[in-house]
Image 1: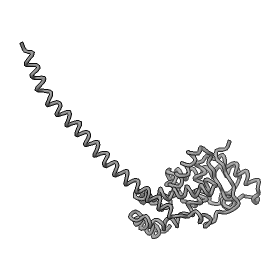
Image 2: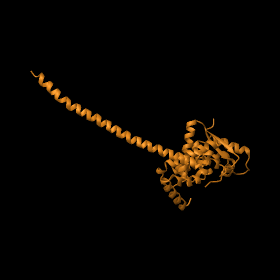
Image 3: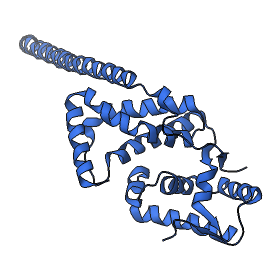
Image 4: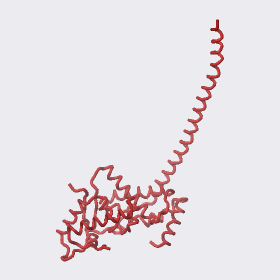
Length: 83
Length: 186
């Protein structure tokens, strides 16, 4: 089996044969849609990053406060067990 | 392409980066050659039109990344078009089509002694079917699109010497198999 398919064309490609497919309006519209999508994605990423940072800060804060609340209880328990 | 033409094009590109409407000028200028380039590799007008639109949409979307590297802007658009065609063939897993104009083949190759006949053309086409795709791509860009080796290298993402080597290897094969003179021999 051959690697490529070669088709021989008798007709020469004309410079204006493709005119009916020419549509810059469509290209421009697609580009604008793409730009809008990129903007939405940027805003979404920005807020997602902020949300992740805030959640991490809350977790860290809770972990810290839990740590500071636990230590006096542990100390008091230790004092009570001393004979 | 003259230096002034390249400078004008760069000005349009800079304007297009700020206002996409300015890109219309380049679209009008390159639509036909890019459409024909894709059509030669698909032999389907509707498909060529779709891939051509996608090429210009991609070019416009990525215009901020474009920088002048010593080759005309058209080479960058040809590169995007080539990628679109390759993407299409990868997706559809079909054999690559090269639709060649008979007149161009005759222009490219001149038989040494006798005139052209149908049999020779058929043999030549059969021979080209078995040439590696990368060789055919180089031949197409060099002889049907009239690109120089620097542009070919940029479009196919290979070195300039690599582009020359591929072309000369393909031409050597043609000469050995058909005892023909190639018009563009240097």
